[in-house]
Image 1 (tube, helix red, strand yellow):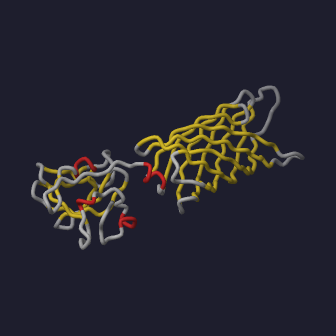
Image 2 (tube, one colour):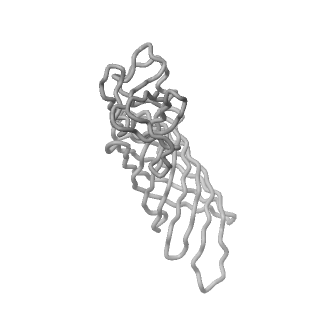
Length: 248
């Protein structure tokens, strides 16, 4: 596994190779051995290249964000380099640097995830986008946005949810969720003038997250919603979803 006197968790260097580190090193350093590597302003290929580190330059590896490494050269210039380009560098022993791909262990200690799901909300087609932050290995906070399209009404809903994952180290990891939100309902009636409604919503649910490969997960879940209307009776609705997510 990894060896470094600097806290890997704090720097986000979860996947830096053991060969790139020594117990007494304050940080991971490497030397460019190919013609050059490109440094970008931010982690992503859409961001501009502002500096090219040429053969022979020494760079310091600061932290990792998904497949991008933040580096700094001897002159203090900092930028982001793709992990594939880090493979064009060598460590102090002259060994090429290599990065392990995300695996199930990384899945079990993920901090952020996001995804899209398709499903059914109260007998109408629904699509959901969500993002979550894991503040412990078992607990996370998720924000979700759902739109549904039915024969008699459409709707949109935003919610904030607390998720408890009982066995985060399992490949098939079950979870429970509870949350609150706001729902807007837009009736489609053309015969009678109807008004859009905005109601508070509470939900409970359960599901399973399945680790696939790399950073990808399959997510299946069911939620039971209570829509608190201003009429005499509250409404209840069930929601099924299945979708693909990625973790970071």
